[in-house]
Image (tube, rainbow, N blue to C red; front, side, top):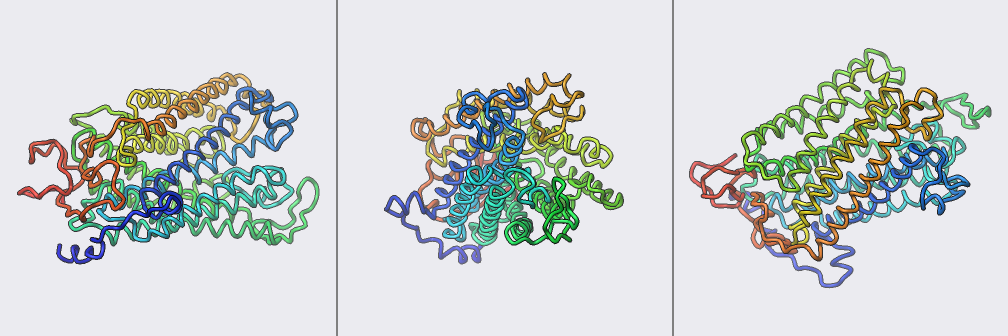
Length: 598
């Protein structure tokens, strides 16, 4: 304990809040404000990415029909044809930019940038992150990266159109399709910068968690949401540089005429390619998926951490199997690096290699299954409070189970060969990343909103938003499993072109209508969020009767966080232990005889 106290002595001086508007609000180095910057920026990108999805759904439901309102504005543009309907090339750009924006600019920045920044120092009992300036820099790299993404729509012949996976040689050759020249180059620079921002953030969070924990904050007393951020930071540090290398190689192909991914004797539209060739398109897939499968866990793990905190808090019970939950997170990280080949079962890989990837993919379901079992164990016999955050946490749990089960099917090579690149994959991915992750995001934002802004979000609007989102989400994505089994291909703008898909076109229409409801429901959440910042009910210090350190401070949290660095005596989930006359035990409460969860 004395070592801890000595290590933290330099942090006992209280930092002074900057005076000027620019230093306080624009170029702030306060982790809480940077978290809010990430949050608001990512929500803006979410509206943009969601808008692109609405245009895609219109085209799929009503092929070659002018898009209402927007179609008039975009006539004869990079997305819409002369009559205001989405063109096939424009559809490809919409698909690419929707996926890229949602993954690189929305989900990762909210989960890691917003929640990670805001919560990690509070949860470990620190004044700020280890490197505050570097923290601000990571945001100011992320924002221009997002602007570069957007700019790709307005240069040359439109935004990138090679899918968020950017497979060569389509993405490599400037003349292969509209959007493949300047749009694709801007996209590459944007992803590269987002990756750089991600690496800086990961390094910062790991250092903060390892070096700045308060006295008594042992590894087994950290909240699971912080454990999840720690494992995610490891993922970011190990996997993101690999993605950066892929982006650099493809940029060299495009800008300097190299041929890392261009095969020899390539013919495009009847014309032999002028490139020397000698590269291999499959090399890109190996490098890209080596990052992008771990990226799925970067998208999901923080959501798992948030769900763990919410489920324990609103079940009024200690989390079931805390150490096993931590081990399963680390297990997901270890296995996450050896499953990337399941994205390439169709590539003609040796069946023995395919078998190895199939087994490792099935194996990764085990730690996820352990987590689900432990969440259910926490709920079992609990005194459950069905608050809005809890409804979102339970939705996360149920959607994640559906997404996980469909993932098991796709892990099997023979099944995957049949449903690869169909709407079954779209359904699976969205159940995990939207149904899973975004429900956790909504729950977490409502839960920690009092600490961010000192006010409570509106409960009635919260329940309406949750109900509309939950119902419409399932109406959008569950039928996609059936579309996929019927052979409906993704990234195709007009299903009615194919005779075998015409009898199930009614399903596309229904999915699109549900998607419009889903999109509209998010406007309720955005309104509730911004309205509550200024008009919401004033929050007390601990409205949810939670245990972690941030709830021991006033709402909103002062600039310097803690008046005095706390001494931690308990685990984060000591609910209903009956030792202090209440059903919760703040982590810095004096130690009771008999100890707590160590």
